[in-house]
Image (tube, rainbow over all chains, first blue to last red):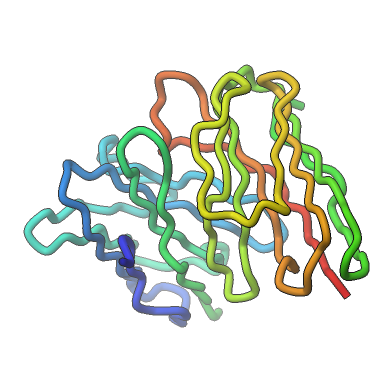
Length: 108
Length: 114
């Protein structure tokens, strides 16, 4: 069963527009959720984790247990935000389950 | 540079061959992982090791055999390569006490089986 769902394969916006990358999860325990980002020709890297409640590069993500969602948001997209974004769920202490990823394209 | 490194970056080979991919991390982490990213960019865990011990083996064919000579290295050997093995393979590591969510990834090894 798919544990992490990212419904959009591709999201295209213009520079300055708001961005919301959707992520829904299914997990019976107490979830830990993360967003990872892969810029072109770079390695996958951790962007943020829900526990930290931080804003990184203008991105925020709030865990909504009622809707089982962890959407990634940014009020004003920049061209350098263009990348592949993966939502991930920590399943216990053993492994991360990644979503299928969403490619964000920000046009000038 | 402190990082997770993989060799080789690219690997092109014929079906039926045996090949290895090496991974090293100098971050002092205890846990290391191998992931496979297919052509649709889907990233799936294959194995994880903690202090040289196998923790996770995710329904991966027996042709894939990880080896961890020490906690800084996790190599992946693949026997009898098949077309479907073509993918990007990522190594990752995570520090102790940080939980599995904080992982540091290598640059990936792009494997093409002809």
